[in-house]
Length: 339
Image 1: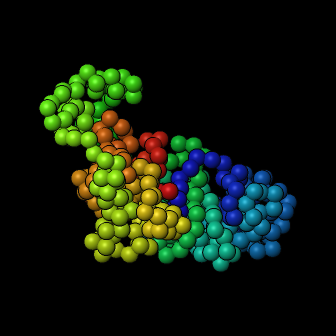
Image 2 (image 1 turned 90 degrees about the vertical axis):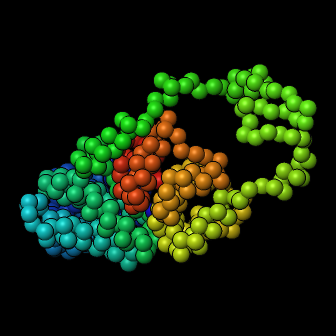
Image 3 (image 1 turned 45 degrees about the horizontal axis):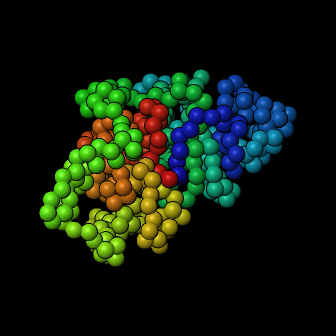
């Protein structure tokens, strides 16, 4: 997917470029900066930075990656947090934008960021995260690149207290623990129950496990000829009905161009559930419309699954920013939307 939040050590990321949360003098520091210098080779990295001389807050400069898996290191200087200073948000956003622009100029197709300024510079993590997501999202709407936002552990990641409490309240009200309500039947057990519940009739057989009354056996050609609208067909129809372009749709769905081309060209394409939901979010479908689209791919939304409940919360609240949704899914250890 074009933007992915992952837990990892940024110095181990195999990407074209990693971003260093640097200081303005480009000297080896602590935290992420120190780890990057160590992994790259302190003397080589410091010599390269000394040749550049320095970097202003919000700007970005580039060096080789030396001993890192990444070919390049982009050094950017985030603002030091000072409550009530509105200039800082713009400076922090510029760190991401200028780093991405520099990566684009260098023909990078993949880049990994830390959460800039959220360490010793003291920027509140929820605000730093929101700024990062918005800046990266704006860039990706106009450009193609695989972007990773790398957090070392859960302590470096936080949802806003308001969003966290609202999601928790919604989960408490709607999440049905599957083991408490019903025990999932194995396929063999399900088949046996269906056989026991079948009722014969003169014109056919009715099964309480089946979705409809079967009046007679149908020829396979008849069944194939009466297939419902496919997922690709419904998706493309909805895009037209919403007055959206293909590019706008797959960008908002956090889907890469190659996968969307496969969907458009392949009538038999069946997406994963997270991909199908990503398109529902991109198209701003309501819950019923989302279930209809999911049904075309053989899925549904169930309140027995935490992932589904979180998705329903955002759709019912009409929050269709896929990156914000992914923030919440990541916080609850759920799969992220996109492909």
